[in-house]
Amino acid sequence: MLALLYWVLFSLVGNAEFIEDDKRALLDFVTKFRHFHALNWKESSPVCSNWTGVTCNADKSRVIGVRLPAVGFSGEIPVNTISRISALRILSLRSNRISGNFPADFTNLKNLSMLYLQFNDFSGPLPTDFSAWKNLTVINLSNNQFSGSIPSSLSRLSQLSVLNLANNSLSGAIPDLGLPNLEQLDLSNNDLTGVVPKTLQRFPSSAFVGNHISFVNSSTSQSALSPLPQMSLKRPKYWWRDAWFFGVLISCGVLGLGAFAFLFFVCCCWRRKDEDDDGFNGKFPKGSMPPKKRISGDQDANNRIVFFEGCNYAFDLEDLLRASAEVLGKGTFGMSYKAILEDANVVVVKRLKEVSAGKRDFEQQMNLIGSIRHENLVALRAYYYSKDEKLMVNDYCSEGSVSAMLHCLRGEDRIPLDWEKRLKIAVGAARGITHIHSVNGGKFVHGNIRSSNIFLNLQQYGCVSDFGLAAVMSPLAPPISRAAGYRAPEVNDTRKATQASDVYSFGVFLLELLTGKSPVHATGGDELVHLVRWVHSVVREEWTAEVFDLELLKYSHVEEEMVEMLQIALACVARIPDQRPKMPDLLKMIEDVRHAFAEIQPSGSQ
Ligand SMILES: *[C@@H]1O[C@H](CO)[C@@H](O)[C@H](O)[C@H]1NC(C)=O
Ligand SMILES: *[C@@H]1O[C@H](CO)[C@@H](O)[C@H](O)[C@H]1NC(C)=O
Ligand SMILES: *[C@@H]1O[C@H](CO)[C@@H](O)[C@H](O)[C@H]1NC(C)=O
Ligand SMILES: *[C@@H]1O[C@H](CO)[C@@H](O)[C@H](O)[C@H]1NC(C)=O
Ligand SMILES: *[C@@H]1O[C@H](CO)[C@@H](O)[C@H](O)[C@H]1NC(C)=O
Ligand SMILES: *[C@@H]1O[C@H](CO)[C@@H](O)[C@H](O)[C@H]1NC(C)=O
Image: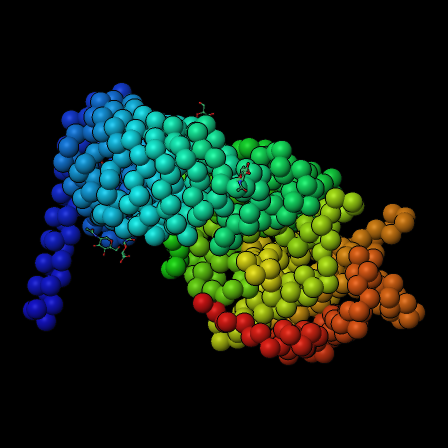
């Protein structure tokens, strides 16, 4: 007992010492370093809660982030100040007028993960030995006057995902860095010579322009077209294929085209707004996140952004609000934004409207949702709750929703969604929903299954989002949501959705995949037709083939599989809830449609 008390006391005192040291180091830093804008760093106020730009770890025992962009620092960074904050992970001093060499004592910052020093006046060589910073993931030293060669020791930074050295005066050859995890590289506008090493040829030529380099036996365009290794959610693969398809890529920048394709796709969705009130149909203004002052008023200790385990995004609410954001669309429960964080991570922020649950219930539900990890479910990474603002932070899926794929890019320019792809979407979504139904002692319900909530994972299988939300939101008004066509006939209050009603909605989704038609669609006249009713009427008159999406009829050898899937979908949309199959059985039926899927078992939850 006494030992325990000692231990507690000791660790308290120990922690207090660390944070006091960090505070001292920061005070030394600003008092010795000339700057124009006053900082509110007062010795009397707590460093972890009141100091602008300072972030601490969870127990407030260490400073782990210092972000002081555009504070007007000029001159050299005073030695032995900021480098004393040994637990520092994020350091941003971008857009100041800091001069001098790369600070030698930064080697003490062994845990440094993100370093932003772009837009300063640093000069001299880069550190020769980068091996001190094993955890570096982002290095942005662009727009300085660094000279000398690119150190080959960078190749030891196995975690590195962003390296930006553009607009400096670096010379010599580009070392063969390897760096399999590198996702962004920019070496443009230096004085580099020689050839682009093989391992870096996967990056677009824009990463190397403004140097004196050549691509070995491959024209720049070929190199831009070489497949991206380690495709990740952050990279818009779809656009690439798009570009390839058009065959115009050679002359245009990849990004430019990607943006064009995306704009086109967004415009198209926008026009169809009336038919589908969900998904990626918003317009596309370059905007900012919800106004800052709304939130800062009550951002006290109780209203912190809450992260879930396995979240390797390092950001706080401020970052989120500062991030450049695009409106993705208006979903069932509020606006969605795509936010690009300072470290180049992309997340989706949902601003929930009309949360009906109280704080405790909301948090409980979020914690449940956040604990669910599965390869066919879009992970919730963090949430934020205050009186005025409720935010959810999810992974971002670059290819857009299945709704957009099915209904947006129609016509000649569209990449057809063939049966193979649709099968994989159905199998993946079924696996995800089956997992949801097994959570919380088998009582968990999705509550809002629809094609605009289904995306693709990296293996191109369906990946389900927005689960468990309906339970904490105000009930959706019947006229609006019934029109959306997914709601089971027995459901009156959207908060009281059941697993059986999930199966109904999933059945509607399967019909949508098979027919290519929206759950509620217009036929010739003004009349709106409910997809389920329409399919029943067509099938009853034995025109089964007429049911299917014209696009699918091209693939005649798979008609049997399609008919089988149609039967499964019709079983799901049975009027009587008890007659609908249960998710695990349903999954098995869907996997059995094509034998191959039954054999590849999902690797399960992560
Ligand atoms: C810290 O900031 C809060 C709100 O901004 C303020 O109320 C409080 O007095 C500050 N604490 C100190 C010690 O300055
Ligand atoms: C670096 O980070 C790790 C893991 O978060 C931590 O255990 C360690 O104490 C940190 N190192 C320093 C010097 O703070
Ligand atoms: C840094 O890397 C080491 C080893 O890879 C790891 O144990 C540690 O947790 C990392 N620290 C941070 C802050 O990520
Ligand atoms: C480098 O400088 C040029 C010209 O000032 C600018 O257009 C470009 O965006 C800069 N590159 C980076 C990565 O900042
Ligand atoms: C190597 O590539 C360059 C540029 O594309 C080309 O001119 C040259 O003929 C190629 N050399 C060989 C041996 O293929
Ligand atoms: C690095 O800095 C440049 C500006 O020079 C900016 O365009 C780029 O987005 C930054 N990269 C990251 C990952 O923050």
